Length: 348
Image 1 (cartoon, rainbow, N blue to C red):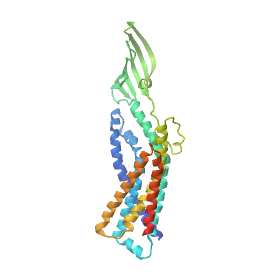
Image 2 (cartoon, rainbow, N blue to C red):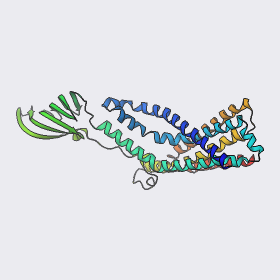
Image 3 (cartoon, one colour):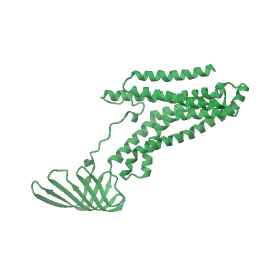
Image 4 (cartoon, rainbow, N blue to C red):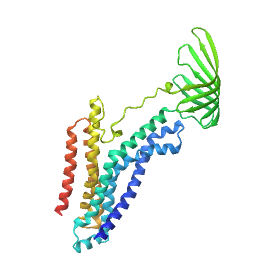
């Protein structure tokens, strides 16, 4: 019996592993395509892949219960097609014992989903937002001569690129002040975290209102582009909080607090799907009398049931951000589905 348990556990685990990777990759390609515009900011492909790969954590959390159930269904379908399941039942092995490895793997996956929701997913979202902020707000200079930065009435040009974010023959034109234009030129300049350090140059200022000109030379000059960019980190979203922070998040916004509470309960409720879906798969495939012409029809019914349950749960979770009553309704719905799945097992 232990040998049978290991075989079933191993086959379902391997099928779940590869199907989750395949589905996650497909979903990641769709999500990553929404951020292709960041490549226009001179972001390298390696950094782009690292940036968008952080989205895969939530994709895995969403896909894993579904891929687990479908993988378990296909493994049991193969067992029934080869009459191995019938032979096991004829030998007096009860369906509960055949179900045991799936329940064990389901409990492991449920625990993994809780760890992802509580810690890994918020950590990934924080890193994602931080990288998104840096890419969109930090200057990504080109690796050749030309325009380095232009915006908010300030333009920075370089005639040469010397490598390691060092430029030669830099010209800066600053026209932020009305009726006054300031320009700077330097032989060398190094850009680091939006701060341009100029060497061996001069600063010129033309005041059109007073009709005055001035010029000064400098050996070293620090030109802070952060003041021009006026960077402000966006407000932290609910999915960026660790699960223990969602209730303690300091926010005077009532709607924001409701969103945090709804996110907490969503993270606590959705891992239960990793127990509901495989029970449904076992009922539709392993417990039903095997007929080749109806087996894949039952598989289609299983997929439809999974889509309906997943959709209803997501709908309740989204509505709960506006109406807290749906938090309890979502818990009751998932509990009812779990009890119904267990009842189907006992019925057989």
